[in-house]
Image: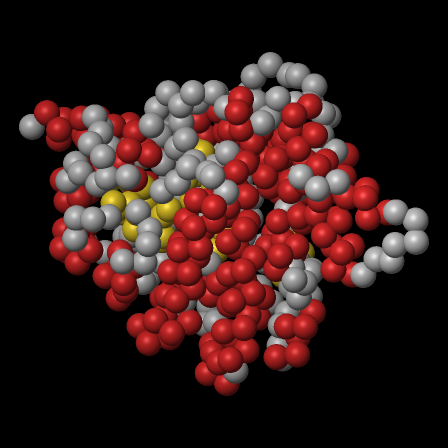
Length: 434
């Protein structure tokens, strides 16, 4: 790596581009030093003991159906609420230790960890929530979609009882000039990479770690362009996406410009997560259903394809092993065929799609993931078992990862989540015996 100090030679002038380059080099050097000081380098990752999720994602045979839950690190867990009560939301997102604990919530021995104080880290580390309770087959890092708009220079606040809010959303085309260069996003989000590396270490090879993908409110993942755009334009949550769709119809060129900016930010960000230790990537297009086929094909699908293509190419260029990528476009049932050919190994389904029909439409070249109605977990444990058995029968044992059709809700009983996980493991083993 180049030495940033050589640019401080006497009499040498600095322009803004060189200054940004220097800052990136310095941050990279600090991050590498920090990771090495704590034994967090990728060469030290423990050997993976349970690769069932990854094998299913790649389309390989498995002894049983792997299962994990969207929003599995969430408010339905009492220990999650206890941990989150001590600090505000975005401070939690910026703390690698807090993200690690919330991702896994398996409390273990305390130890000192050296980390930069600028990242707002705790001084003590409790290892790891969901995997303590449930035999899940994958973990997904705790974070939020909105760290990307923040890194692009937009202010985001979390309003109690309302959710995320942008005090100054994008209202006019000229507002795009306020956004930072997408190339600086990775340097702004070093704390996410630290959280991934720390969590990968603390998993100790128990299960694979999934990198970001998804919508806000899920608080675990990373959204694709359209979903991110809706929050940046609407200024928060919206039931109609009217302001965002107004952009698509009235400012199509500016909309594409914004979507390109977001794509240019997401690609190195996702590659950085793999470099930090993520073993799979899931991308959510949570607001796909608001677009319909025509707008989806014009403003969402091209960027969904572009992200997959560029991430895979960047991983190869960087000498990093390929990882399976998952695309989940909620209410995007009208585009299943296109999504199956968009460059992703796994296509996630919401609960409105019939598994057998989905398989007929996408063919046998991709793995399917989903799709139990989250509200089914309000049923009795016996009924959950019956519903899971029907779901597994419909999907079949090959190229399939069990999940919900969306994320867990805050008022759900953790015991019923456990019943869901256990039922998947139990019935999928029986299905293979028969």
